[in-house]
Amino acid sequence: MQTYPKAIAGLIDELRKIPGIGPKTAQRLAFHLVVSGKSSIDLLIDSLAEVRDTIGYCSVCGNLTDIDPCAICQDPQRDASVICVVGYPKDVLAIERVGGYKGLYHVLHGYIEPLKGIGPDDIRVKELIARVTGAGQAGRPLETGQTGGTVEQAGHAGQHTKQAGHLAQAGQSAKMGQAQQVSGTGQARLGSQVKEVILATNPDIDGETTALYLARALKPLGVKVTRLARGLPFGADLDYADEVTLARALEGRSEI
Ligand SMILES: [Zn+2]
Image (cartoon, rainbow, N blue to C red; front, side, top):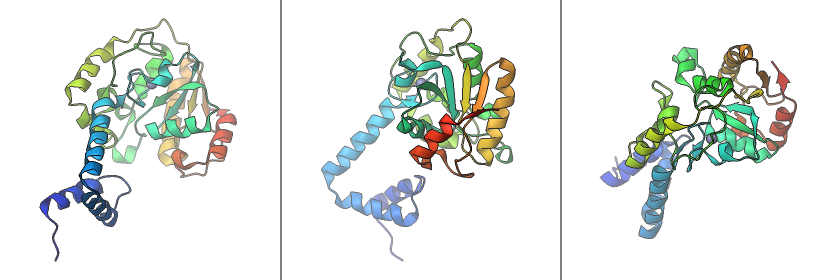
């Protein structure tokens, strides 16, 4: 049986940890990198280091960002009375690609999955409630924070950390440590300006379960709660929906 040099085997092992990368692909990528030359490898190392050192989670919405709060949360042109709730940062990108949405976001970093023991406390539900009620650092922050989001806020304990794992490790850097310390200083607002919460969780079992839970938790707060229109195929990933379908689903959202 052929064995790789230790360094190549280690590289293949690391690449295999990336979602969607199987053993064959990991092997192909590893060999590609090995033969691509020192300068290509150095560029990749620099790029990875930059991501590690500069990217964190927005302390308000939980999206990935290199400034805190993120560009969307800071944008005065965005409508702070509407919050679109999504499962993961990639879903923000999917909706932003559509282009018509001008409100803010809230990234849950996971879904409620009772069978896996993932409950509301394991995703960013209480942060959403706080934004809607105007408690804590809810709504649009009034002053710009420090570069680098708060990994801690999004990186909850439990199974959920599997999604935030890479960033949780990155958060051990000194820079991130500083960002975490200043994260609690966001200014509290008097009351909340949130009028509508759009539940844009995936149209699958976990997404529906989470939407149902959030609707029940949010409606007593006097906020309008809407869900993306049907038309997104059940079981689909929001991220894979084509832009026209997603735009229609957003436009045709209905109150629940
Ligand atoms: Zn944000």
